[in-house]
Image 1 (tube, one colour):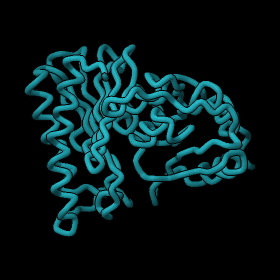
Image 2 (cartoon, one colour):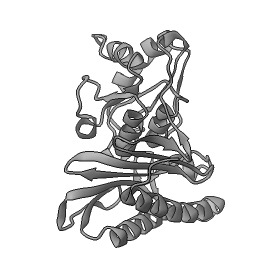
Image 3 (cartoon, helix red, strand yellow):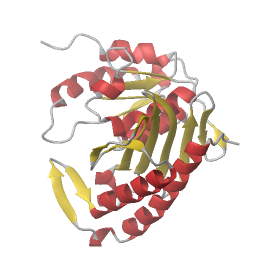
Length: 266
């Protein structure tokens, strides 16, 4: 059985409540009012409603904790040692196109250390959880990263920069060597689920640049508690700061890092 600390229990309950509202909205996708937030980056009434539910539920259970939330930004709390990092709907573009691959992502930081994580896809009722030093789980099943040691039979996930954002040229330079060295590359459109799937062994690795803390905070803890390695793309421990991330098992991580750090074309 998964270890559920009081905090993690609160987080999973909040995710399930918000997930029920998301499922209702997903069933009526054509009726959602959508506004343009940026190039190919949409915000919907579902995003905003989900965020509202999560913040209300978590603040009620943990009064005083701070928040870092995608839509609202920073919400200061009197307790400066604890902070929830939330993406209410990771995979918004999938959601708005009727693609059932999106998730609620919640991480809890204590004194700047990630301690609890939830990534929840309500469509398939997959609840990924992790607690520091207590492992990672999918529903009731303990998770371990895949054990492959060679890139040539590995499946790697990535993210492509949205239209109008920086990073396309670098991505197009990184992609060919990874494609040439592995059995395949996938781009499914939710970094939170990509990392959860690395933790579950469905993917052997994941890399992306230019992400925000709410995209990856929960996923980082999931991968580490499933026995994997996570770094920024310089090989350091600043993924939450830089937004650049690489996750894999201990054997594949250095191999992927070498490919991604190879000299760029002049």
